[in-house]
Amino acid sequence: MAQASSVVYNNKRKLWVPLPLHGFVVAVAVLLLSFAPINVSAAARQQSRPLQLSQKLRFGRTGEFKILQVADMHYADGKTTPCLNVLPSQVHGCSDLNTSAFIQRMIQAENPNLIVFTGDNIFGFEAKDSAKSLNAAFGPAIAAGIPWAAVLGNHDQQGTLSREGVMKHIVGLKHTLSQFNPPEAHIIDGFGNYNLEVGGVEGSGFANKSVLNLYFLDSGDYSTVPSIPGYGWIKPSQQLWFQRTSAKLQVRTSSELSMDAIFAPNNKPFLFVSQSAYMRPPMAKKSFAPGLVYFHIPLPEFASFEASNFTGVR
Image (cartoon, rainbow, N blue to C red; front, side, top):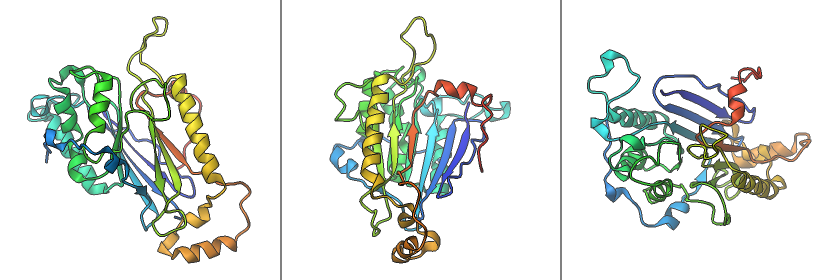
């Protein structure tokens, strides 16, 4: 079963409420600041991690940073894996290759700055060779040459690679910014816990500062506690790392981050934007760089979301 949603963040903090569609999850997040099937062989693997990590994510000259989110591809063995949950008239000829083609079209239509895959990238039970399935699943992003990042779901490790092995394979692929785990965290649960920083517009005073923080967490697969059956969850060690990392980034940016200085409405020169900021009343509080967190298994509060009567703004 697949869904799609769209999230927009700008200086007015607008949210586009998730919209259910069939298939896997595809979300396009556009962040604004007033600053046919593809086959990928083993040759797609890249040896130089430092080169990949040196890829700088930053807002464009238009003040926009767009993220394409893809989840639950459940990729297996390509054209031999039939589609599920489709109409009878769509069954013939429908396979994993349709997923690849659809993602390719989404990339071409949205031209994102970053692609984020949020778990169940492959369906391990049906993947005869997990490494090949991973190469194919991420093929559209690799072929597009766009930076991408991934976390694991509860099905990725059910094939020929362990959970650790899956993440190690992912971090070796081309154009990925995925990381195995944070180097500063000596003890942390899971594989694929890391953060990425998005810099301000090149040429602005925030070009080398983090104005958007992205966090990636491994939410596990299944519970190992007999009294708590079902899916896994984010563990205390991960929460501690997230809290420490977030606090560190907030301290680093709170004294220097002014949203007025980052935003570039109507493509006006940054000098003009900076001057206009001084003509306005001072902000009541210091501004913190916004953050987004990506993981696969929802928090328990998700189950009571509708009952809590929260209303989003579109």
